[in-house]
Amino acid sequence: DQQVKQNSPSLSVQEGRISILNCDYTNSMFDYFLWYKKYPAEGPTFLISISSIKDKNEDGRFTVFLNKSAKHLSLHIVPSQPGDSAVYFCAARERDDKIIFGKGTRLHILP
Amino acid sequence: GAVVSQHPSRVICKSGTSVKIECRSLDFQATTMFWYRQFPKKSLMLMATSNEGSKATYEQGVEKDKFLINHASLTLSTLTVTSAHPEDSSFYICSAIGQDTGELFFGEGSRLTVL
Image (tube, rainbow over all chains, first blue to last red; front, side):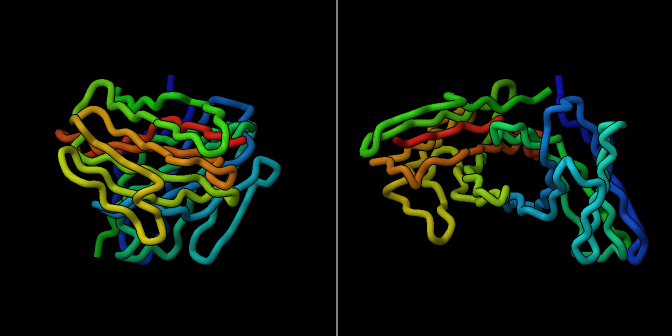
């Protein structure tokens, strides 16, 4: 059973608007959450993370929100730019450092 | 759904020995697999791209002779850490691209501890 779920396989957003990527998890023992971005033919690169003791972390255009009671996190990108078109992976870390990945959401930024 | 399995999930070895980690795509064929190393600040570093039947492409700064990668079949890639040292202790993760769908799936990682 998937512990980290990204229920939207793809998402299209107009350039300049806000992109919201969602992620749900089932394991309450996760203590750290991460987002990775992947371009075609490349490995994923780290984007932003959040500790389970926080509910928000912001880095430039990227903000991650964590709702522990709902076991839900989201990545907000604003304003969305063409270079943001990629696959985004949500990941969660167990206390022994094992990282569990979601299946990814493909984000298309429309001109 | 598609699954990527790594074995072993945990391994402890003595300094100077070699350790092999396997990455298998269980229900799909993967022409391309990636190997990553997780660093303390939680970021993943891509080590190499492994293509079935050909030599792996290593990222800059990754020692080819130390981290041997073999992708002998469409469902199996192996990473061998040769002459392991304590600084090689880390979490190693593989991922595989499904040949038919192009989707990327991650393994659950292998924790290497070198004493």
